[in-house]
Amino acid sequence: DTEVTQTPKHLVMGMTNKKSLKCEQHMGHRAMYWYKQKAKKPPELMFVYSYEKLSINESVPSRFSPECPNSSLLNLHLHALQPEDSALYLCASSHPFGRGAYNEQFFGPGTRLTVL
Amino acid sequence: KQEVTQIPAALSVPEGENLVLNCSFTDSAIYNLQWFRQDPGKGLTSLLLIQSSQREQTSGRLNASLDKSSGRSTLYIAASQPGDSATYLCAVHSGGGADGLTFGKGTHLIIQP
Image (tube, rainbow over all chains, first blue to last red; front, side):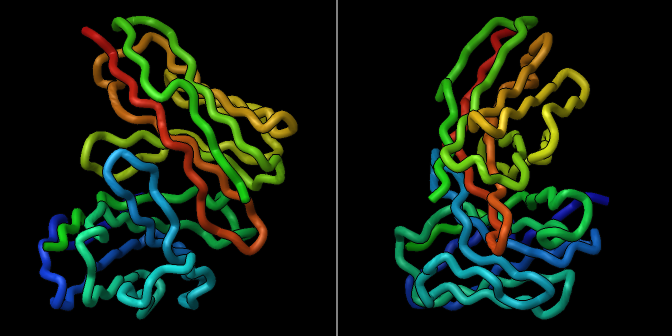
C-alpha cells in the first residue's frame, strides 16, 4: 500500500476561523512533510517531521501550526489565515534520510483550501 | 540554494510520438531525483526515482536518465498517448539534513488524439 490520505478534500474558511488538515499513511514511513502549492506553481516545502519531531520549518508564518501525534498521522492547524494562503496543501511521506528505500516521497491528493 | 529548471514549460504533440522532457539543477550535490506527474487539481504521482549513483531508471514507457556532474536529467516518454497529458514535475533531494524536495516549475504536456 503506497497510499497517503488527506482530509478534507476541500476546505473554505474565514480569516477568523480555526481549522485543521489531516494526513495519514500506513507505509511505516517515519518522515512526513507538508507542502504548499499555489495555482500554476510548483510545490514548496513548509515543514518536515522526522521520527515525529519537527526537523525543518521553512520560515512558515505562525498561523500555520504542524503537529505529528504519532508515526502515521500529521496535522496542520490553521488559525487567522489570509486570503493569500489559499492553495493546495499537500502531504507526503517517506523513509527518513539515510534509512532505506532511497527516500522516495509519496504524496497525498491534497486539500484545496480557500480563505475568504 | 538549489534551483531546478524544466524545459520546455509546455509541449503539445500528436499521439504516438516519442518525447523528451528536460530538467536541470544548479547544485550537483544531490541525494536523488524524482519525476512526478500531476493531473489538474490533483496530488502528485511518483513516476521514477533515480539515486545519485544511478544513471537511469525505467518503468514501462518511461525512462529517466541522470547526469549528476552536469546537473541534468531527462524523462523520455515512448509512444505517447492522450492519457499521458498532465504536468510533469522534476524534484531533487539535496540530502544532508534537508529532507524536503526542491521542485522545478514543470512541463505541461498535451498529447493530441
